[in-house]
Every structure is written in C-alpha cells, then in structure tokens.
Image 1 (cartoon, rainbow, N blue to C red):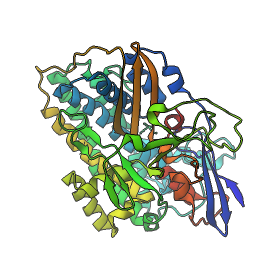
Image 2 (tube, rainbow, N blue to C red):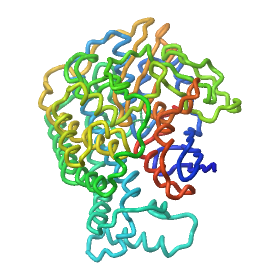
Image 3 (tube, rainbow, N blue to C red):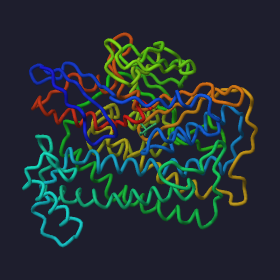
Image 4 (tube, helix red, strand yellow):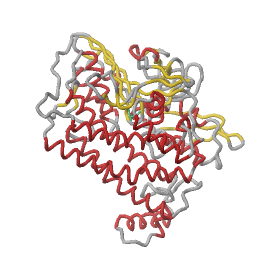
Length: 503
Ligand code: NFE
C-alpha cells in the first residue's frame, strides 16, 4: 500500500514523504523536495564580497551559518589572516543562532508530537498565556472548520504524554521559549546588526566593533538563554525521553556520520574546534576530505552531470526528467549516505574525545536513560544531542566574551585576488555545511553549497541507495498507516529545512 504523508508540517518548506507499507511496516520511503531555488546559478558573475550576504538569503532560520561558511570560504580563497576578535565575533553571532534554533525546533516544531495539547482544557490557573492557549484549543475543538486557526490541532492519532503536570509544564515552556528565542536573536543582532540576515558578518571578522556595553548586553541575554536551557529545555527533553523510550530505537539512519566541527577555538580556521570535525563510518573515525564528496542527480530534477565533485558542481534544472522525484541532490561521501546534524556532531566529537564537556553530558544523560552512545542515532538521540550542543555552546559563548580584546582589531585587512578558490566548512544547526567559491577576474565564477538538509533529505543516489531520512524510515513499524505518527516523528527529529536543502 502506497501512502503519501507529505507535505510534512512543522518543518521549513515543502517536503513530501512517499511511503510503501506492508503489514504495518514501512518497506520503502522516498523523500522529495518540492521547490527549485537556484542560488548557485545566480551567484555566478557577482562580486565575491557579496557572497556572505546573498547566501544568507538561502534561509531565514540558519542565515548566519551560511554567512560564516561563506566567510570561511572567502578567507581560505583570499589567504586572509583572521584576528582573534574576528573569530570571536563570528562565534558569538553564530553560536547565539544555534541556541535560538534548538529551542524553536524542540518547542514549536517537535514537542507537539509528544505533548498532549488537550491537557490544557483542564487548566484552572490564572496565567494569562495559558488561559489564552486553553481558549484557543477549546475553540479549535468546537469548530468544525477544515482550516485550523492555530498550529495545535488537528493532530495525528497516537500515544501522547499522559501526565497533566508534564503536559502543562511543557506548554508553558512552549510559550516562554518564544521570549527566550527573542533574547538569543537579540544577542546575535548586537554584533550581527540584525536578525535574520546579519549585515555585519564579513570575511575576516565583523564590521561591528565590540564595546564594553555590547559585551555586557550580550552576556546578560545569553545567560538568560543558558538558564532556560538547563532549567526547562533539558528537563523537558528528558521527560519526553522517559515517556517514549522506544524512540531510542526508532529512526536509525543506516549510513555514516559527518561533522565539519563547530566554532574554531583558536586563530586557525582549520585548527581545533569546540566540536571536532570528522567522518564516522563503519565504526571508524577519519578526517574529512572534501574531495571525497560527490553529488548524484540520477533521481533529482537536473540534467547536469551526476557524481560531480563539489568544485565541479553544476545546476541545470530539468523539471520533467524521467524517473526524478526530487529537487534535492544526493550528496555522498566515498559513495555513502551520511547523517549530518546534532547526533553526527556529538558522536563525531565523543568518539574522538575532543571536548570533555560533551563526553560528560552524553555519559550523564545516557546513564540516566539507560542507553549507549550509539543509540544517539535515533529520534530521541537527535533531540538530546541538540540539548547537549546547546549547553556546551552557551557556556562557550560566555567564555568567548572574556577573550575579546577591546582595543584589538575586529576585522582583517586583505586584497581581493584576481583569481582564487576556497572551501569553507562549519556546522549549521542542522549539520555539516560546506561552501565553495571560485573567483575569476574578481567575479564569482562558481559557487557551490552542500547543505545539511541536502544530506539528510537526499533522494536515492546513482546506485539506487536511499538517502539518510529514507533509510531511517524504512523498517519502521506504524500503528496507523494512513497517518504514521512514527514516521512524522522520525522526519521531524532531523529538523529538515527545504529552503536550505534545495537552495
Ligand atoms: Ni534553512 Fe540550514 C541549518 C543550513 S539546513 S536551516 O541549520 O545550512 O540544511
């Protein structure tokens, strides 16, 4: 039986998931991005120094990651030496965006897969936000309109959290988290200039000088976000995990794990990072080699060559291509699908024993849940790894502010070469993000982005091997094939962003 569970809601953009179900098991799954963008095509011929601005428009959720990857690529291409303040300001802007993004993903996009929103109907307290929520939910249940006025109902059938206290607490945090996300965005805008789409990020640093006032405002906002992470976000994730332990075994991807490492901690762009880069495949760790990445398009709506290296990437749209079912390309590392994102980032760091705080948090939470590190490859694992990243990043940002030298330079001086090329790699919230720039005659000759959701939501490759989410869905047992709350939970655990995936 073929069931289309798309367009999947509570994610960014247009994602269709086509499943085949036999005896309540997903025996096949196809992930399809439904909209063409074309950034790589219209970047050609532009001024290279506009790239970190233009590529931010790929997405309104993770714009800074694109600006940072673009800045790194340009620094690499132009041979820029980045002053310590430049590195720190990049990190402060990018890190605050990670914190915002994890809270948004958990509370607004994923929690309602587990939290019973109808528990609010019994709420008798005086909290104005919660009584408003109660009235909304009640109106929605009473109304027979097929077009709901709020994001809460209708919902998929399945088991939800039964404890009224946990449900009401999580709904309260759902509302509070909106204010906290605003604080994270304000913090990044202090140095970035605005949210989204920062004006101040530039290759080699930032156009906004760090003053004592800026630093103390930033610190106070991030401290509030950090408190929320520890007091509400992490306990809520652990409560969901305790209520749905089967989800440590549901949604396992079947390729490797790729992380480019997040945030340089020293002056070297390619030196040590807060989260280490690496490829974890068949239980073995290896350093990342950009030349091992190829993008297949056998099942993607492009007539350009398949299996091209990043630096040779091409983009010729072919909407009616025979057999193609997605606008997303199929990136592969040494021919293999890779999961990217929080679980990959944490596992790659954990296995290399890079960051002691990562190891300590993973061991503590895994001990509480009675799981092994390998079980982080799961629906709950991805949620938990976002929380681990958030805790580590928040502490790091506060320490980074202490390392700013107010009198030091915060931008690099450089000349734009006539011709050059460079790679820039970072971890966006959703995973490994790579930009490549080639400049000729001081204009962009080629620009390529290999983006987290492109890896995770990729279709079949040239050898007919499934993409990461496809592989995580295949084999899943579903109670109700028409609705598949299990498949929805799996897809959302990756936090897909289709604007990024197709770019
Ligand atoms: Ni549009 Fe993005 C992130 C990037 S995901 S959200 O995080 O890069 O593919």
